[in-house]
Image (cartoon, rainbow, N blue to C red; front, side):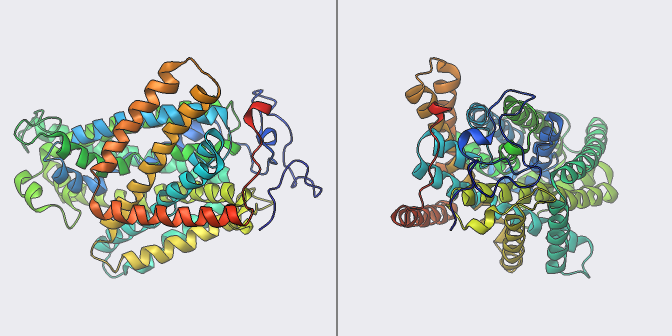
Length: 482
């Protein structure tokens, strides 16, 4: 593996690569941390916000509504509300660390520089369980949905089509991806608006159970263990706001815009999640059966939409889910994953070939292609398993939650211990509460996810020992020397 490429690289910068601080903001560029600016800085606050919203998918609950409904005893809106609260503390910690270290790599970068490189590697390794698996999960869900609509086309062909299309779009550059994101977001919001309007009209007209507060609280079924178990599934819909942090080296505005866009995306998406699941829960045709038997076919939301508007609305929501998960969401997921691989490879924590940047489009081309290959292979394999979607979902959540735990620790260590910050609210209280909530969610996660997640962590420890033994510890420039 090659050495990290720095500002002192005799080969000089790639064509068009910027040097020095970002003149428009005064924030230090990546050169201040020992790297060269290779990715293209072109994304505005709006681009970042749209990216986060598309990554989370405003209609994400459509696809996993039945599972959350069953796990929460019908209190699906409450599960999403608690999920948003839990992620709000995490978003606040992300905001603080993204300002301190405005670089690609997400929690890998923050834990590595905020605590220490070995911890950063483990954080990056655990978030990889989320980032590397989530595109495959999205492709699989979308392909199965499309196969249910067009049964003559097998699942694997839909998988190939989605993967190839998204890889081409991502290769064309981050600006092109951003334009596609905006179009996808508009389409999703239109479908959601149609469902909400028709759903509310149907409830007012006597369809479903009418308006009540059972989706937010039901004294007959409520328990903390039950609700937090449902939250461990519902948080899948929130994963994506953190992906904004992987675009730090493509952000053209001040570093604080990263944190603002993450928090804004989280609040907007969370509000939409709560509203749509509340309406859908009141339209479920047989809630007791759904709680008792679950939603093996994954059609609970579409069935609720059918109660409100008939077969056409059920089909519309199903098609929208397929496109949103298989194209829009997986598009940004692939982009985020490639940036994480790029950052870790640049520090010699992964093969150096993954750090190659295309000189024309200024994207990590090899990392993008690797994500495509893994997603395709994973999606096809999991499509052959009855528990493919469930297994991938729980593993993705486990990887993200454990990495977020290290993120909260890095805030306390970097700001309170190292920098002697006296901002107790943002640098101590917020991360401690966020850590406690996520730890409880991880504790209540499915046993299968816990077992496989800890196996993945064990592999990460073994790789860390190998990297340290072979001298692959990156030389991270001390932040206090900036």
